[in-house]
Structure formats: C-alpha cells, structure tokens
Amino acid sequence: MRRDIIVKGLSEATYQKLLKKKESDGFEEKDWSDWMSHLVVGVNLVDSPSEMIQHTTRDSLLETWIQNLSKNLPKIWVSESINALVPAECTQAEKEGKDPDFPTGSAIVIGRGPSVFKNKHLELLANSDYRGTVVCTDGALIDTLKAGVRPDLVENFLSVSVDGNRELIRKWYEHELVEKYGPHIKVALTSSVAPNVVQQVEKVGAKTYFLLPLFDDWRQIESYTKMHQFMTMSEKHPSGIPAMQAGGHAGATAWVLSWLVMRKSPVALIGLNLGYLPEDPLESTYYWNGLMQKTGGNVALVRSAFETIHNPDLNTDAVIDPVFRHYRESFRDMLSVTPKWVETINCTEGGSLFGEGIKSMPFKEWLGKYKK
Image (cartoon, rainbow, N blue to C red; front, side, top):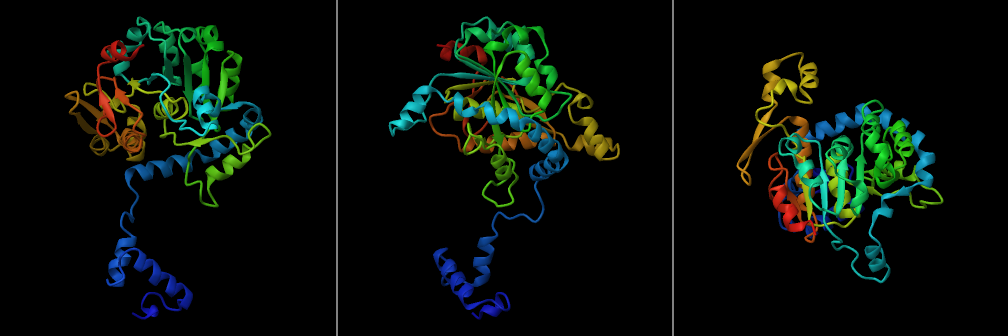
C-alpha cells in the first residue's frame, strides 16, 4: 500500500517505521485500517464523567493549588516527606537488596461517612485494646478523639489533609483535644494544602509529612506534577518530595499511605462509604446544591444524576452522585492493581465499595481477628 494513502507527504523513514510497528503489533498481513482501529482502542471522543470531574476540578482549583504551593515551599523544603513514614525494617531490607514491600502490622483507615456514626465504630475502636496504626481523614479527626481513641496509645496515629480550601480544612485541627494530643499526631499534607492548615498543624505540635499528589502524567514535558516536583527540590529533598496517586480525596489518600508507605496489612476501612445512606434525603447530600446550580434548578435532572448501588457482599444499598461515582471508580481501579500482600477489608458495613481486591467484614469481627 502506498504511503500517501496513509498521509500525504509521509517521509520514507517514517513509512518504514510504521511498517515495522505494524508488523510488531501482529498486523503485518492485515489491512492498514485494521491496524489503525487497533491503535485507537480505548480512545474516547467524549470524556467520561470521571474525566470530566477531573478536568473541572483541575481547571477550577489550579490557581489555588499553585498559590498554596508557593506559600508552602519554604516549609516543604525543610520538613519531612512521607518517605520518613516508611518502617525502618523495610528501609533496612531495601539497603540489603531484599524486597522492602511486606506487611509490618495492621492499620485502620477512618473516614467521615455516615456509617461510622450509625454503627458507632469510633466508640468500638476506643473501647478495644487496638494498638496498631490509625490513619484518619482530617474531617474525622475530632470525632475520633471525642470518641476516646488515644493517639498516644497506638503505634502510629496519622491524620491526612489533601484539600486546598483555606476556610474549611483548618477547623479540623482547631479543638482542645487536637491541642492535647498534638505531639502524638502525625499529619500527612499534600504540597498544595492550604497554608493556614500547615500553620495550625504546627501550632498544635503535630509533625508534618509532605507528599505530592499525581495531578497528571508526570512523564509529559508540560506536566504540572513534574513542574510541581521540581519546585520542591531542596538540600533535604534533592529529587523533590515523593509523588503518589491520592485518589482525589482524603479517604483514598489515607488508604494508599497505609499500605504503600507505611506497609500495613490488613487494612480495615471504616466510614469510607463513598455514598449516602438510602434513607438520606437527596436534598441534604453534599453536592445537591452544586448540581442544582449547574442544571439551572432542574430538580428532575439532578435526581437522575443519583444512582443506587447494591452491595452484594452486605446485601445493602448505597446512593451515589457523580462525584462519589468518580471516587468509587478511582478507588476500585487502585484496588485492582494493589500488590497481593495487601489485604483491604471494608468494615464500613455499608457503602459502595466492593469487588475485586476488597473483602467485607463487620468491624467488631475485624478487631477480634486482627487487633493483635
């Protein structure tokens, strides 16, 4: 077939490369159209809802992220990164040329979903003698302390903040119990977190550990993630602070930190519903007002954006909106590629998380089986 049928003006060298690529892909004896169709498998002309949410979030918050980063840089340059949370035995194994990825104890990841209150999971944890690692989202921190969970009595107590909002997030660290236990609390912060959050965390005496979330493909020359990492380079961090997939919200970030960085398994999830209870009025859900604004107040259209998910593991239902659908899809994608040594157990006793890479178990049963 002549190369000008593919594209007019194609050079001989490029044409030969295409022939070689076509052959290596197993299409040597097939039509060029078959090979071209093979090349674009999985390419969508229209963004998926998840991609649309990612793009909208990035476009609307990019200015805030960059402003926050610029103010946080002096602190990032001299502070610990999440690398300091890697257990010493894993670091030593790597130095000795051994596999550094192995479980070093269990962890409990705490979200602020409705089931954690409905099932009194925080009180259950506080009344147990669990002494492993606790990783909670910033929104769940005060409730966790109020329930009686003691940061000074567990191996690690880590709070996670990823949001750059300068009004909302600081309040999660403004409480007498946070001040009381501050020196026993570790806080993982994204590089673009609100600067006043960094200041408040320092004020209560907690120790900070910075990470860089993967905003885009860092391999591309125009990558925001790559530029972001260059800016965090310092004498303490010659290569910049480490980047990792954060899942778009604090709950997913807490889970990734628990096994990828802190090497914990099994990991119990409580309060990570990624959805609403079936009995919750849709008008009271997080994103109802935002969806109403975007649709011009079209109630029927907004209601159609909500979906009921049946959890076959628990025989329960959860209601999700487009944002939670995106979070759920991202979380399930990460679960599907989690290393085999990582065991993730949904102890939420509800919610929308189930499927490949995750099991379900009542939290009381998990505590009885794994608390030691």
